[in-house]
Image (cartoon, rainbow, N blue to C red; front, side, top):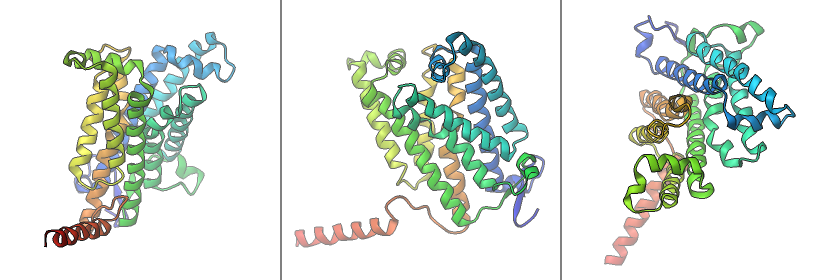
Length: 306
């Protein structure tokens, strides 16, 4: 095994014990789920997609015809991300994820919709950055069989990108309940039984949204793996509500959010790289500032009591 790279083969026992190998495969699984889940709605067709086609002047009849084509491309990309990822594929996935996220506000759905989908484009772009840009045309289309060993600086940068992704997806989704009051969230909470506590569902949705927005802001500061495990569990739990609600394509809805579940786990993976070098993660407010503030509070309390 090269000191500069780690093989991505599942059959290499030495590589499988490295954080780089784990991160690489977590990226692949996340992108497969995201694009296969999203593509499934194209193949099934979805009424909510019609405005994204008419935005560019396509008649509604064409929209229904083109949806399966778009969905099939997404599914193909998702499968390729799992079995044979390439830099060109990752670049396309990131660009397509950004484009489809921007369609929401362009279609009049609001900027929160774009912010919530930060993982759709952030995760594929991050995987591309981790593996390095191609230097030749051939390198862009060659299957990724190695991942560069991560330095402390690159692991820290990746963690900051992931903090931004998680903050965006949680604050954006929280705004659906607290600010936008989206009707589909009310239906999910009703089916989940939250309406049986005597609290109006709009209040439940607003409270959940507010909590999520705070959680998103905490992603910029927290440095504990347990916190990010909770973020993953929270996202998985809230998206799973589509299943008991029998939403259209419920299981595909859950699968499509694959990158949102992976983002906090990826943060933990990069933290393992830092821990191997004896480095601790830093939040938005440096640890030394927290220590100074805490020390100052203790001195102030001591003067007051004396």
